[in-house]
Structure formats: structure tokens, C-alpha cells
Length: 342
Image (tube, rainbow, N blue to C red; front, side, top):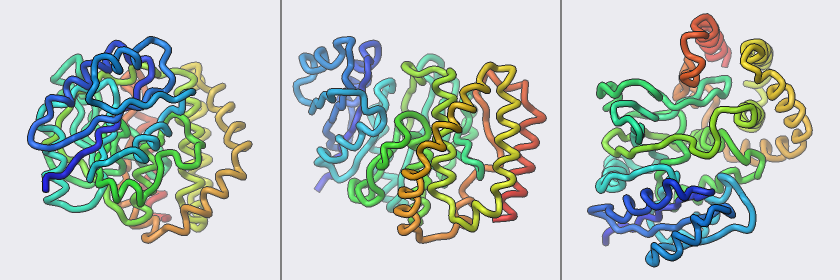
């Protein structure tokens, strides 16, 4: 019997792009699908317009903005054999989903992402597989680079991009909810999800044959708020997902890296966000420790095995490139040193 894919789309004030996204999914070929639209209490009328325009999809409107955790409502309502998390600012090609199913059939259980190309410039990459390093810095590999077909190999990655994550429904429910502890709200929930998968020896894969177009952060641009969540949530991942032994070994290096991050962002006006993030983190320690205890019980492989799927380098946002070659080299050397210690 032909499998059914539950396509779960989040919407928050997405009237400029949500209709194009849904229309593109409706043109999907060679597989059965259902669309579940979760609206995070939009105020721009986009939910009401979708309700009028698309009678064949499931629509759920939240009474408040649950951010990325709203995907969990989609998980609970999914009827498909597979789940695809899709950002509202994407355009899916007719066979994009079919290529993910084919890849799953060829390579087996795992959490997959496809290749994301810029919606405004089809020659530029948005993500050719998401990566993180031992210090928890996550990034979209290849973002902003010209697509010269240099990332055409199916391979393991650190984590799948949250806006284009595919897996069997059984596996998604086994790993558990996105931001299951409700600590993240925004940023790095996908880093966390992929890391949690690896903790249970569940691989994350990049399938380049599945291509979609991505507009890129239409609601939350690079800002003090974004940096606050990125830094705070990076430490939530580190404290929750590393073993005590690993944390003890690399904690001095983590502190050294954080001092470097602080000074790097002073001239960029973001140092205050780093301080605020650390104070916020401190207040969350009891919840983080409880989360850590729960997740470590599920561990099936060692940190040493997990970090083999991590990167040694970090790709910075385009606005910060060409300003940080020295900092990049330091991160690479510290990453290599930390990996050896683990």
C-alpha cells in the first residue's frame, strides 16, 4: 500500500508566503500526503484566508504562539506513515517528498533533510545538510555559497534543518516531541532534536536529490533576540546532552570559547545579549538538570561516537564573514583539541 506523508507546516503571520507554500505541496507527485497547518495565533488574517482557500487541509489555530513546539500538535494529529516538518516560507518541488521516501527505502530509519536552495536566487545554497560542532554551534552547511553541485553526496549530518525534517512517524514519536521540555521556544530546537536522535544511535541524513526553495527567516532576522536564544539554547543542549564525564573534560575549553564569543560580539553590539542569556540559563538550571536526567537514561552510544558526526569548523552568518578568519581558526583548533579529549 502506498505510504501516506503528513506534511506539518507552521504559520505565524505568513500571509506573504504561506499560500505559495501550500500550493506547491498540493502539486506533489508520486506519493500520498495530507497537510496539517498549525497556526501560532497569527494576527495578519493568514489563517482565515487559508481556511477559505484550502478546504482539503487540516487547520489548527493555537490561542498563543507556541513557536517551534507547535509542531508537536501536528505530531499528535498526523495520520501518515511519515512526517515532514516544513517551514511556511518554502516552495516544494513536485517530487521533493517522493525523493525523501525513496531515500528512506534505500537507507532505512533515520532523520532526513533535503537540500535547500534560496528562493530569491536559485544559484545560492540555503542548506546542504546542517552541522554542529563540539561546542554546540549549529549552522546550515553551504549557506550563501554558489551551488556548484559540490554537495551532491548522500551522507550523514549532525542534525536536519527544522524547516525540512523527514522521518517515519514511528521514529518521530519514539524520539519524542520537538522542544519536549519547553525550554527552547526559538532557535536550536533542531540542533537539540538531531542530537537527541544520535544519543539513541539514530542517524541523521542529508539527501541532495530532494530539493526545495527557502526564503529564509522571514519573521526573525539576525538580531539581539535571535542571538540571545542561540546562546542560551546552545548551553541547554550542552548541559542536557553531554555526559558528566564529557562536560568535566571539556568545561575549561567551553568557558574559553564563551569568553571569546563575548569579546567577538562586543563591537557588533550583541555582548549584552550574551550576558542576559547566561542569567536566563542560570534560572533554568533545575529544569535543565531534570531534562538531562531523563535524556541520559535513553543514551545508547558514547559522546565519542556521536561527535564523529559533528563538524570541526563553524560557518558564520554572511554579515560576519571576512571579519573572523582568526576566530575561525581558533575554533577549529579548539574543536580538534576538545574532540581528542572526549
